[in-house]
Every structure is written in structure tokens, then in C-alpha cells.
Image (cartoon, rainbow, N blue to C red; front, side, top):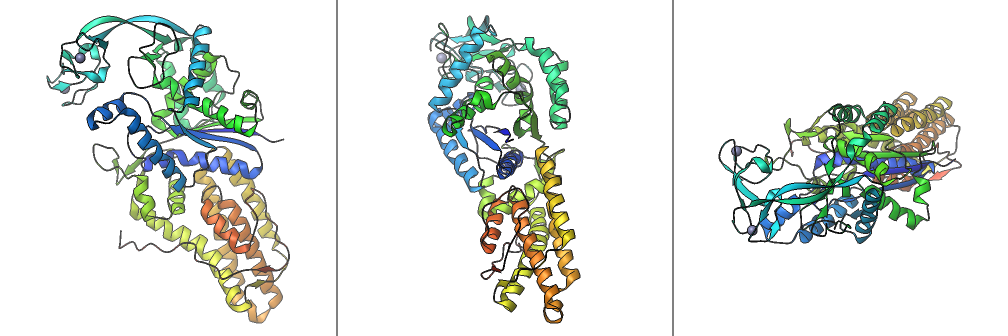
Amino acid sequence: MKKNIFIGGAWPYANYSLHIGHLAALLPGDIIARYYRGKGDNVVYVSGTDSHGTPITVNAQKTGITPKEIATHYHDEFSKTFESLNFSYDLYTSTMSSYHKQQVQEYFEKMLKNGFLYKKIEQQDFCNNCGKFISDREIIGTCPHCKGKSNGEQCDECLVALNAEDVLDKHCKNCNTPTVLKDNKHLYLKLSVFQKELEKLIKDTEGLWRKEATGEARKFLSMGLIDRAATRQLDWGIDVPVKGFEDKKIYVWIEAVLGYLTTGKAVSEQKGINFDEYMKDSPQTLTYYVHGKDNIPFHAIIFPALIKAIGLEYQLPKYIISSSYVNSNDEKMSKSKGNLTTINELVKRYNVDTLRYYLIANGPEKKDVNFSENDLALNHNKYLVGTLGNFIHRNLSFIFKRFNGIITEAEIDKDIIKETKRTYEEAGALIEKGELKSAISLVMDYISLGNKYYDTQQPWKLATENIEEFNKCVYTCVYMTANIANLIYPFIPATSKKIKQMLRLSNFKWEEEMIKGNINIDEPKILFERINIKVI
Ligand SMILES: [Zn+2]
Ligand SMILES: [Zn+2]
């Protein structure tokens, strides 16, 4: 029976170019999606750009353009970046899309109707001159700790995080008028009522979620969940569809994470799938959420609570694939340090499959990892050139030169067939669990086995001494090559396609590829060029 696979890749925030940490955190989603498609299961794989919230409005103010222009700029850039990396999203959209907005508003209304949103009066800074409540970032004032200049969220000088009520001498950023406190009404989500249910979820998913996700979620729950504001005083975002709240927006922490559902629904409509059925909790349905560890609370706590509050009978996150961080030359990467390596820079310099391979094989699956271009080049030379490229090229180019590219059908080595089947099974099981580092390492072992087999058989000698044994060896290696093309496809799809073209094989499937008859090949092309480490 076909499985229903739902994969949600985290929504990057439209405030800065994507960097290598994003890529490392999001790649697992693409690999899992490609794998299940290759098995013939149903797959819905979605993501998009998180386009609302205060950092964008602040950035807009600084640069003198509108929040929409900023968000659109980064959304276009992100879409191109993901395309260049061969991400296979069924839909990559933006929280600015009218479909998303309309669906989120419907979900919001349902939460209200189900009694999970309630009104609460809060005192908030108001500017009499502008005639409106102002957000924390629009406040300018004095830091209570260092007496330096600060906004309502953070001190510009000592960089400490602040609560707006503690900031001294508050003024409106737009007109410099002192602010006054005034009652403001907001809607709050009753997050606290989901404590028990979420505790159960953490227990039930033990071993399925990455350890860090389970640990983070537990930490959160041990502090006791508290209700959170669901609306925000802001100009940029999705309107609150409730009377009396027309001047407010839905808080991004609710709205962006619901993008999984709005986008999933949009894809399902295109594919003629009933999304409510697709997402029902059954052994046939498997949901994956893929992101960096700073995003864990939104996926492990907030998202399942929202599903419940809306009243949806959907599977709560089955697999949470959260990654640790990628450091750069042993330092934490950050915009302020200026050591962020953006993906676009890397794509200009390296083969996309080199990046994909490196960030899986050395990915931050269980702990932070260090990124250096030197290490990337070493891995590229050792595995992609030395192991993979070498195995495929030595066999095919020998046949091309000595036998005009004609590979004669022969018996395939039985032990190799056994190893092939085992690799599909074991690597597949690892991919399903999100253990991609181990999965790709098994695939690499299989390719190394090919090199070992070739060395032991010494076909360059057999070619003159024993043509029958020669044909067996070469045909076995071609059989392995065909299967390597399948096994590497989820990880490095562009290389897989090149190999398939060389052997004139049909599309990828995650199952043993049996080759038949004589095979004609054209002159084989080099898959990977060695990177000169001195140049880096
Ligand atoms: Zn003002
Ligand atoms: Zn300060």
C-alpha cells in the first residue's frame, strides 16, 4: 500500500540571504522526499518564505523601501537558490500569498470558535502624536542597565534583551514624542491547556524525533506552558479577521508555522488529493518536519497545539528532523560577525552535488559541525573524485577504449547482487529515520566495494587472458554503476542523472536495477574534477 508522506521544510525568514546553516538544516527534507518518490509513495513536500514580522519592517525603515519590497526581493532570491541546489519542493511559496492569508484567517476563526483564543487587555506604548500603538522596535529609549540607547526589545550598546516596560524615557521612533501607556486588547492562545497532550506526544515520538528536539520540547514543557499573544500591533502581516481587532496582525509565530497546512492544502488541490484524508493519523501517513534547532519549539510545541486548537484530526509531527549548527572555521556564524557563508557564493564556486554531498556526509545531524572550504575540497577529492568518479570512470573508459563502448551481457556476481539488495534495504531504513549521514556512508561503502572488486578481478589482465571472466567482471561493474545511480539519487541527483544518461537507463527508482542484454555506451565523461586545494 502506498504511504502518504508529508514533508515540511522550515520557512526561511526574508531578511538576509540563505547561508550554509540553512542548507545543512533543510537538505534532509529533499533527500527524504526524493527517496519516497523513488519508492512510489505519495509525497507532498512544501516550504516557503516567511515574509512578515518586525525585523522586516525595521529593515525596511532603515533602507527606505517597503516591507513588501524587501520580502519580495528575498523570496525571489530564495526561490532561485533552492532551484540551483535542486530542491524538489512540490510547492515553494510565500506567506504573502493570498491563498496562505485566506487559509490562515480561516484557521484563526476556527480557533476562536473552538474557544482557544481569548481577549486580554494589556498596557502598551501609545504615541499621541502618531495616534497609534507602537511596536517594541519602534520605541527609542534608555537601557536600564548601561543607560545607553535602546529600543523596546534590545539595548543597542550592551546588547541585552529588554522588556518594553523596563526601558526608561521612552519615545516614539517616528516622531520623537514621549510615549504613554494605554490599554490595548489582544487575543491570546490558550497554549497552557495542551500541556498534557503535548507531554504524551513527546513520549509517543521518543526515538522518532531527533534527540535534541525531544530534549528541547521536554525542557519547554517542564517549565509549564503559558498562554501566548496571538495578535500583534503591527502594520505588516496578516489581518486579524475578528471585529475590534482590525488594527492588528496575526502574530508570525502562529501564521508562518501554519504555512505547512496552507501549502500542503494548495499542493493537494493541484494533485487531486483530499488533504484532510492524507494527513489523518494512520500507519499509512508519515509526517516529517525539517529545520534547524532554533526552530524546535515551533514544530514540537506550537504547531501540534495549533493543529489541536483548529480541531484538525491530523497526525501530529511523527518525525522531527532538527539539525544542529554549522560553524565557520570553529566560530559561530552570524551576520554581525560577518562570517556568514552564503549559499549563492558557494554555488558560484562549487559543483552543487559537492555541496550537497559534503553537507550530508558531514552534516550537523547530532552536534554542531565545522565548515571549511578546505575540508569540503578534501572530501570532494577523496569521495566524489577518488571513490565514486574513479569507480565509474575506470570501468567505462576501459570498455570504451578497448571494446568500442560495447558491453557484452554476462553473469552478474552473486555476492555483489546480495550486497546491492542489502544496501537498498539498510540505506532506505536509515533515510526513513532521518539518519542521512549513516545512509550516505553505507552508499559510499557500496561504491568502495565496487573499487575493491575491480582491483581484485583485474579486468585489464582478464581482457587478454580470459574473456568470459572479463565480461563477468565488467558486466557486474556496470550493474553496480546502474544501482549506484539509484542509490545516490536522493543525495546528489544531478550526478545520478549523468550516470543514467551514460548507460541510457530510465528514471530513478529506489529498487534494484537489473540490466539486460548488451549495452552500448558513448565516451564516458568525467563526473567530478579534482579541486586544487592550494587555490583555496
Ligand atoms: Zn509618533
Ligand atoms: Zn544597555
